Length: 218
Image 1 (cartoon, rainbow, N blue to C red):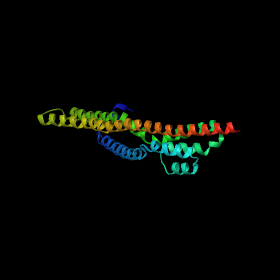
Image 2: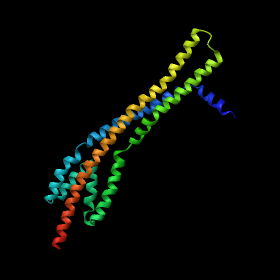
Image 3: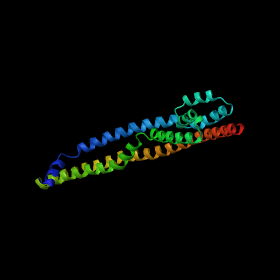
Image 4: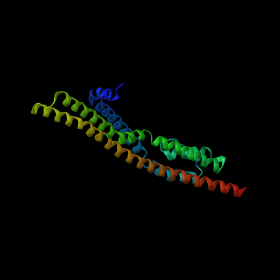
C-alpha cells in the first residue's frame, strides 16, 4: 500500500470539509460564549451582596433567615456556605473538609465548557492550516497534470492557491474569539471563587467564634 498515493487521493477531495468543520466549531464556540456570559453575568456581585446580609443574620442568631437567603441564591459562595451550615455541628475539621469538596465542585460548575473554548482556540489555526495544505496539494496536482499552457492556466492556479489560504484565515477567525473568551472567562471564574471564599470565610469565622463561646461556657 502506497500511503503517499492514498493521502494524495484524500487531498484531491479538497478542503471544503475542513471549512465546514471550522464553521461548526465556530457555531459551538459562539453558543458556549453566549451561555457562559449570561451565566457569569447572573452571578456577578451576588456573594458580595450576600455577605453583609448573612453575617448580620448570623450575628442576630437568625439561622432560618440565613438558610432562606442561601437557598434563593445560585452563587457559588451561597452553595458552599449552605453546605457548611448544614454540618456546623460536626466540628471545624469536618466543615473545612466539606468546604474544600464543595469548592472543587463549584469550580467545575463555573468552568463548564471552558475547556472546549481553550481547545478550539489552540487547535483551530492548525485545522485551518491543514485545510490550506490539502488545497495546495490539490492545486499542484492539477498543475502537474495540466501544466501552465496559457495565462488562463496560471490564473486558475493562483485562484486555487488564494482559495487554499481561506482555510487558514477562517481557522484564525475561529480561534481568536475563542481564546479571548477563554481568558476573560477564566478571570471571571477566579473573581467569582474569590468572592465565594470571602463569604464562606466570614461564615467560617462566625462558626468558629460560636464554637469557642460554647466551649468557654462549658
